[in-house]
Amino acid sequence: MRKILVAGGAGYIGSACVEYLLDHDFEVVVLDALITGHEDAVDPRAKFVKCDLADRDNVIALCKKERFDGIMHFAAFSLVGESMTNPSKYFRNNVANGINLLDAAVEGGVKSIVFSSTAATFGQPEQIPIREFDRQVPINPYGESKLCFEKILKWYNEIHGLKYAALRYFNAAGATGKYGEDHRPETHLIPIILQAAMGVRDKVMIFGDDYDTPDGTGVRDYIHVVDLAKGHVKALKKIEDNSGLSIYNLGTGKGYSVLAAAKSHSISPCSISSSLNSLSKGFSPRLRNSISSSVASISLHTLSRFSTVTSINFFSGSGIISHPLFYIRRSFTSLTGNKSNSVIPFTNSSNELAHLL
Image (tube, rainbow, N blue to C red; front, side, top):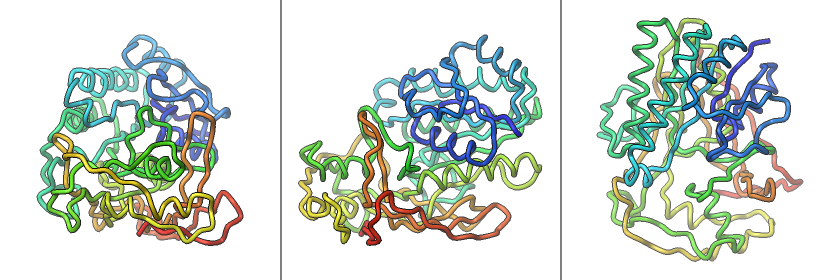
């Protein structure tokens, strides 16, 4: 059984990956400072260590003691707007503290690391869809911090032989049935739509209606969090086998506008279906240093693909709230090109679907 350290394993994507690893016979240790993560999002089958990556000595001691076979690194701040007002927080945590983890990996004899990067490293794209090798010019400190760490990984590979994969996510969505979204504050569009439909918030605020897009609102590529989890395991195996690229886009190749998502309607008889048809929407100026369109190219070497239809669970402070709003049909393509199709089942007994558009 391989032992994996998951840094940031109490967060949204990290907790989904921990669950997937455990379900597939990995031994998992979760390292998280619980700054934005939640201890109740840590799978009880995993060993949990509360520790900040800034605590260099303890991180190194952990890696030396446990002798991990690999690391998955999710521990980062990720609010673009906040990074524009407090860049030092992002460079200190996402870069400097991340170096502590890399040094711990080297001293602990870890051979492989999978890094949670972002499409924000590209900045304003020169073309849509965005390819792995397109020019990277971040337009905010968050994207810059992730790009910095990608470059650092390259040097640790060259100097220390630390194998790596950097996975550039587009927009994560969905949940596993156990774990989902609980951002405080919530900034992800789909949970915000659900909250508005349930009356938790008054309206869905749309920031910017003057982008160069068909309806004037930003366009995003949504990938299910379970596909992200699969992608991490595929990437880990790929770098252990010494084959494939080091950097991959993780997306679907298809974009949806913010306005289209906010206007989504349900044909499912769930309790909030009627609310979706009459969501109150508000408009504000576009956020500073925001991107008009972000859609992945998946034609090169794709870790995962799925077509956005939709069942999304999201995590609230009181537990998992399940809604058959987002029924996800995932079409997964492995790094070796083998393709399989699967469907994430509903969390209730309904057989009807809800559509994003």
